[in-house]
Image (tube, rainbow, N blue to C red):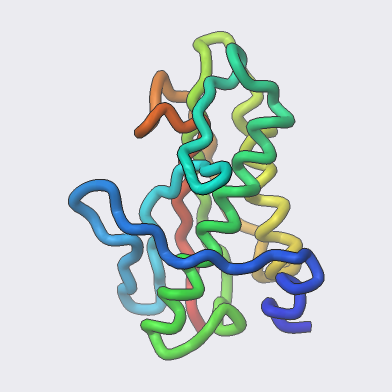
Length: 156
């Protein structure tokens, strides 16, 4: 089953690449690697504002991280096309780095980040979608967003 078939089965439409909010590019392709800049959680097209452990639950954070994964997939698709392939040309999701806007007592960053990791596994399957990962708690993110995630992938 292709990545696009899995996306359709999950009822996921790939979004367009978001315009960067500062002085950076959405992705960089070097060798076989594609590095995606951090994407913040959005709900209804606007930053998904909140702080885990204060105004948001772990489950809400997990949903936000899943939403980030959908945006990352849109950018990864664009990066693949720019490299002359498509999402089926992804050899491996290499690394996910997650920043969670949280209180200093919140300790479930890893569970929040599962929202992204689990979706990547569903879309790419266990061989390609399994990845190394880091999840950090931070005092604040751009626009007050609850989660920001960046991704690194290897192309075939």
